[in-house]
Length: 283
Image (tube, rainbow, N blue to C red; front, top):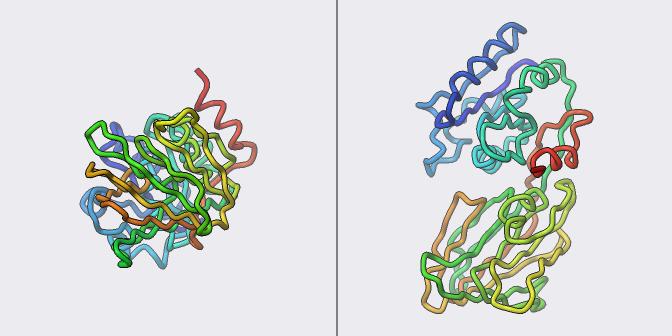
């Protein structure tokens, strides 16, 4: 390992102390560390991180992200085009995307320094927003696409089609389309199933449905999902990974499919998804 990029979320408490430990660790092993300074990386900017860190592209072999799942999601979306391994060090709450916690950091950084790690590819979603036959926006997501109502407690309706075949008309607070990676996020809170993140599928979960049943639907990752919104003059939002938002109008169409782009998340021997799941969800 010659050059590693380090992207911290400086707004996290004690982020500077964690960064100093990582910097000292790799300096002692003569491994070059490129640090994304506060003045260079703005997670709240509309400018892609790939543009903010364009000079990194040719030299990086691996990206380390220090923060919570939100930080990792932003890095994963913006830098997926670089096709580099990403290691998350959790400074957030649950940290399902982060492979390791700060308390055990040095042991796993040693594995990075000696090349004792593997990468698991995670599928992503391509989403297109169409209005009156015009494409307004396109998004890439790692976790989920959410259609939800605004601040008023009014029911919205979302019609769903799979490969152009009508599936269901959902009335309620909205709908979540999640990847296996996103199955432990909002979809789980809404009653959706937990899915092994290496699988290739979609989980469609209604949010507080106004019906006698509340069931998620699992479909193939090769399927094409088309959603149409009936807002009934209520504000409706399209949210990408809980971070990017777009206001929807009546009859807007959201088309979702598996992206050709994937994210490579670093993993270590013996540190399995199910072991992590038990640690994160135990009470």
